[in-house]
Length: 485
Image 1 (cartoon, rainbow, N blue to C red):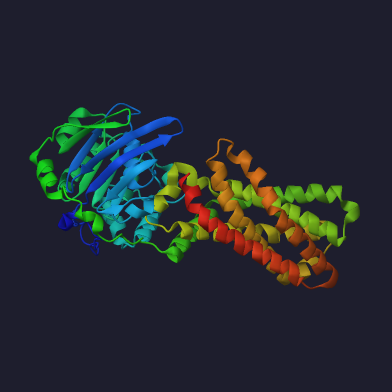
Image 2 (image 1 turned 90 degrees about the vertical axis):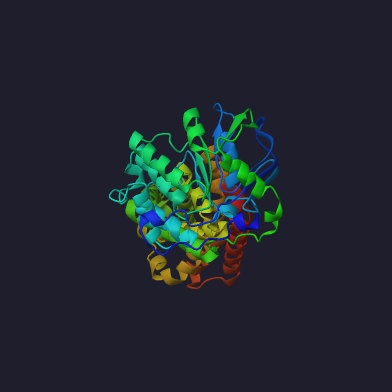
């Protein structure tokens, strides 16, 4: 069986779109006693089956039968409550484990609305370690070459579905997991997709779900029926599956080496930072709203505490109130793009290192917070007659940078946790503000000392540095689990 198990395939360097797909060996899928529960709902119930390499399998069944959960479990997007999943001889514990072996099309596009289709695909190509020439190849495959520069959020449902299909095919994976791939497509696009899948049959392992029984019978070697989390195999629709069974029945594929993650920590961090900065520069969705909030707060506090103008402690206290509340508002907005249409899971499915994604998020958020903090310092300096605050800005920046890193680190994880909670964004301030207390204490006293004696206090700098490093380390450990939800 080892000759049928895909290793990390070498992609074609450019070339015509017609010769792009079908270059790799197919991958086999094994599920052993797999169950998945969502609360008290049992979506999959002790499924044991195998899908031989090179087989095209159609999943059919009523809504709620477990088809989407089964596909997501094979892809690593959902962890089984019990049991084991193997793809191409490699155990699957998370989305990154299938990055080189599988492409998954779900009901979400896993693309960023405020990037163009071409920018999204280029991002995924870089994470997969593939040449950007493949972006044009898959755009041709889905007939979107002329419209790929439009923002994804401005595209029609059908166009978004085709872009998601392009993302799935981008790295020419040996295994394709397609959840209702024909839904939402016009007849011409459905016919084009059917031709693509027909051309890939035999050279790739394809598993797709559908409500169309005729399409399942005509387009697959085998039909598997699901009902209430149970899978009932139907007879093969052709001899291909039986032949594949004879070749792939053994377990020797499990001894093969675990695939490496296409994108390492630093490259993942750089791509996430690059993406975040591009979106923010283009839309200014975070900076504009947060700066307006900071200006309003500064004005209100300036009017309320006018008698304290010039007092170092009053100036420092108001500055840090602005920084913390502006940070809270920025964090509440910072993951909007990642959660919209499941784009964050798309990064993980493309092989982005979870720690790298976290590091990139912390860096971009810290940069945004630093801009907000400097703007707040300028506003407070003017409203509270504290020109020394700007005169000492180079030294103040040291404090603000450490504070921004610490707040971004803890806030990034808490934002994910709150998004997965039923309380939603209401939970974020309840968790964030208590953890921000060390920054407030150290920041207020540091700025007071800076204004009074013109130098930074080493002790408070150590506290801020330890807080920033500790939160980054702790956040890196839990981020992947928080991202999975």
